[in-house]
Length: 555
Picture 1: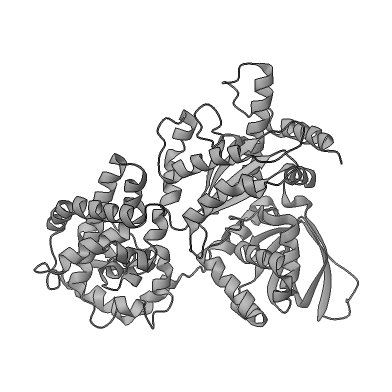
Picture 2: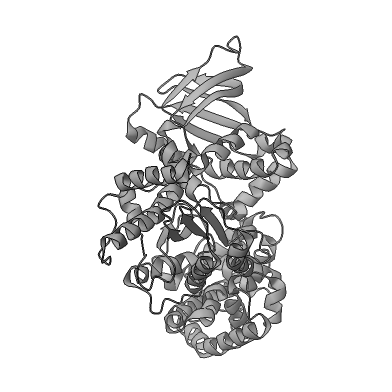
């Protein structure tokens, strides 16, 4: 199909979807209005495509305009734990691709966001400042740069050079990418609009299920096992549209997803035993006549498909399948398929919600089974302090209560072993991955002292108070030391307290701890900042403080 015809169809569909939703108050002429409308609309459309938002909500996240720093839209997706920074270009002839000048402008804007540098930006971007800052601070967040355009050419190496340099600078040697880049070009936009924007029209024909079973009431459901390669093919074809009714999309490269990937690649034949499987809601399920004489194999047709539980598993399978399908040819997975054709929408939402929230157990929950935690609770209670070490407990009296979440951070930062300090920043969940061995046993064991535990938490709170006080007063890399180096700063300040009289044999006053922390905080912060600029002037701070070798160099 000629590019100009695709452009006509895309423009027609965009005008249908975003009619009256795009702010054009800054446009002067009719030509300017048309160009701004289409450019901003495809930026909003990329949010719709990536996050499943309605068009009216997506359009409210447009930041395009004078002094937009090269960022045309921003969306913080708390469900996916992703921050989307978007640049868009409408090419009316459907030709061309991204230029190096365009990618350089985009990169500079993203770099400024990463450095919390919003000076001089427009009001729309200023309004997104807190969302951007919160996402950058959050260890679980990934940042996705999207460049969407209606050109027919993928970006070449020359054009991508500034983007790749930024990706390498930010991600460096981390196993999980903090920053990723996606290009959406003419064909991607056309395919998305042509195939529909919801899961209602996803049809999976000839779905082969082994050892299948059936539940008839209250809704018909089938279950069994399916080759992982079939799931990979679905993801290859439909991507995030598979998760339109889920509470989250595929998050990409995270620590949890890396774990799923490792098992899938290294032990594919055991993947079924290690993974919980996936759950699918369908508008209609048809059991075909083929293989209908037994339960060993069943052939099904699924209409209106949405994966409501197992989005991360599905996404990981898809990413591995697209790179090396032969590596997972022996893997199988458990699947549930529920026919909700006769159910109301509320019931579908309830199934989705409870499938993703009931019986969710994290590694730290197992720590509550450790007798050491109960011993510490009893010892602290004798001092009038309540130790909340079970999930769900909330603080209502900070002076006389501490939590396990606080305690494990302060204990880790109290360690002389800097690999533990780096681990707190890199993957705090690893501290409680196995409560029978290190690193957990280094932090909580028979010699763990209830006095130093309580005092360490008070130092943690004092450091966080100082960070909250000073962070708004500085910008760029000095501010990033507070954001990304918070645990290393805590480690250094705890080292000052360890030798203080009473730290290990009595409960110190929180006011005294706060006062001492405030007296030494700025000096330690300045020292770390200067060391960082001396040793790693070109490295993104998030990686410096996750790397044990690098934080050793800062001492």
